[in-house]
Image 1 (cartoon, helix red, strand yellow):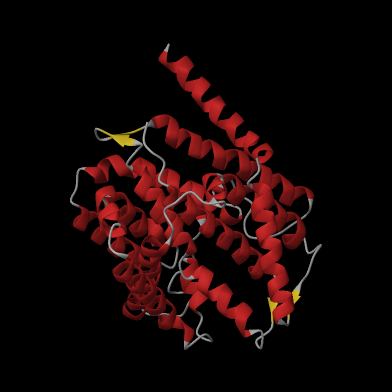
Image 2 (spheres, helix red, strand yellow; image 1 turned 180 degrees about the vertical axis):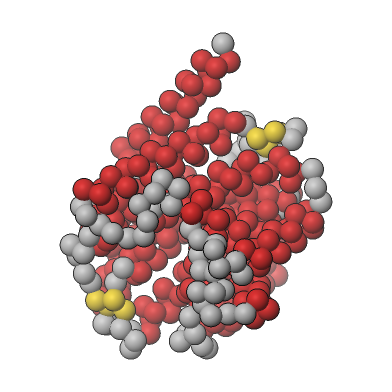
Length: 338
């Protein structure tokens, strides 16, 4: 058995809190003068899903052996997507919620992550045989080309798949020993460098917050929708990738590696990621709840509520639906192998 690396659990715990917070902030009306809330909203979106995809790529090495991906792993991911996509579509239908196109392959809310990860897993055995520099370069070029296609949409999560694929393969090709070497640096070298990466990432957008960065950070809007030409759009997207990579580097350098009280949250990040979207759909997409952030007190309230939701959804009872789906897939494969 591999020894658990708590740095990654701690990182996922922080990232999943940011995911919940970003969605909470995103459904609120944030006044222009609520600068801390606007800055936090932008800060989270600048890297949080890129970092999650990066971590997923890093651990994908465990599921790809001898040029083959473990089929039950990919199947479980798709099963998660299918079950919750149908559930979310049912909720939207019953509550008469019209947000986007109601279609099985048009992911509801954050479920695009599961579908994109499923496709990336299928692609991994092919890319494993190719040089890292080629695969990462090819995914960046592919992202630029797809972004300039006016027909590119959220169907089959093609836009976000292309936008975040480079981060997956950067994580995949990153050697675990390399991470350990970096983490073994003396604190007086590692911490200042991590803070420098953090500052560099934030400084690349903070001084121009009125620019529509979020639409670029989302990864779902093509250049035509953003009124950008090919070269301008490509340059901006590479710029946005660098912002996220600098923050990922900061996380790798700064996140504590010892077991902490938040490690369990990181271990249960998937259930938090999926289940908190039910609250978002039922409360906010349905317009049952409307919240305005017009003060620092309101901003802190939203961040506190996000923390509470993150902690509650990390508890064991909320893991059962995922265990049942996982067990169902395993049973199907055990029957197939007989």
